[in-house]
Length: 364
Image (cartoon, rainbow, N blue to C red; front, top):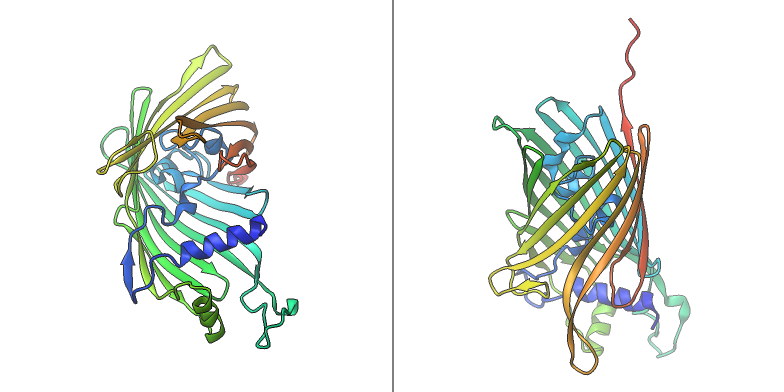
């Protein structure tokens, strides 16, 4: 079994998990995890320590309150990344626009998918013969459509924001789901310090799954000892991300901006640095060095976990990320070298683009 077959089987298992009871509601720890990967090579290079630093079009994902920091008439952002040696494709596009001095809007779309997966459930015909012409292909993909709004509050230095998310997950013609959720966020600036909070899935996000298996596929499931998945409702529980940052000038040409974030989850103990039954805390940190606001060098650490080695020895592992950025007038390109899964050593090169669009003044 090659990596694509293994990944496809894993995706199908995830999509069909815990669904043996009709219309059953489940709340797994890692629901809609494609929304936890992050967007924008700048943020990924800083190990996703970005909820306080963000002030561009990617704020629609990281912290919608940050949309108020956009000074252009409009911004457009694009990103493409590939994981698992190019098998999984991750794409992102967004635009953001200030409405006036006190409000801004944005829209983002995310797709994480594996395409061209072989469907071998019909490989053997009714006479027991292997017929490779019966192999078909399908895609397993997750989509998110995020509508964002930000507003400046009467309190000096305080902005708030919110997201409305529509989520669509699809596994070929066999299974699909539609879901909806809300995020809430805030940014508070005091002197040179910036403090931020992002409350993802603040009301819990649901995915309503619908399975459409023909009789032949149900027979295959039964003969291979697998449960036939039933329609179900999947819940994603809230996650709170808090961060703090500050920028320092190093002379007239250089600057440095570190950020520290804490991800707090409330769905039981996770394998993170601080894990309890009530709350688990996953810290990560990043830093950005700038030169004349043109060239940027970034680094970060995250994904801190306890790992048991062969022999039973336990150690703490962490994932370092690095990145670069270049801004030329209204065009910005960012690069990040990340590792989605440190255990298998598959490093990913991520590129993202940003365009600042300004209205052309009318000649008087």
